[in-house]
Image 1: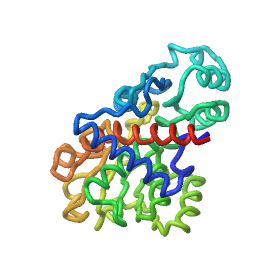
Image 2: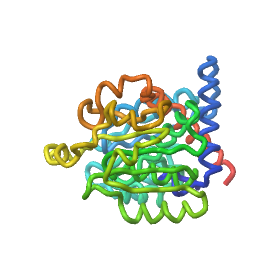
Image 3: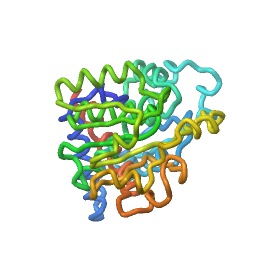
Image 4: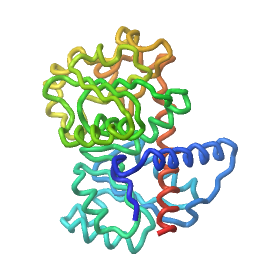
Length: 309
């Protein structure tokens, strides 16, 4: 059984296979054709952490593939009343065909997958957000930024930074991560990326100077400084991230044809300015749309692997 818990579990070739499937399905939809790759299949969508893009993209995606999505918040199911994760996993496995989980802890996701007889997809955890990176790389391909690019990530060493580390180390491009002191990436994730980079040829650099990271970059990306669940740290984080706002002056340090990515929601005036977010270099809404198509590629690929097993 193949699950989609982190990009570290996949080869470069497998990642590209999923993205190519997503691009093919996207082209079919744009041409008005809806192929029922997952006809009558049921995707259980467990949300312990709410979302706009994740819910809309998965629910729309499974519908366009010929299946049905079930939205399950922690208030709707027994997980919210203390049922063990392994019990929920075994029950849902017998009733559904695939499950997406958006939760606060990577450990909970992995426990569910260990007891699941159907493919499990990570819709976001505290450690990784791999479906977002599939959409990001699809967007890079569409904008011609996938040929040994230099990517600059500016901001918190969080689940997005970790996911960029996994993508870069698998695909073999240059990634520069700029974080304030005290907000660096998880050491174990960094070690995994370094190991994968030995094979792929990826170049990974860390700095506390965002300008150094952005200089000459093909892609500039950031994420919110105040994630859901850490609102009480807002004032301190705004102070600690002073100088990390991606503004027009910072973007001028990148290549003239560089693109700007952001997983959204974006807080204008904090991690990015209104001017950059609404500029011609910003492709954030192409990126947001590609959550739909990239995830369809992931779901179709996982189903194919399940049928082969």
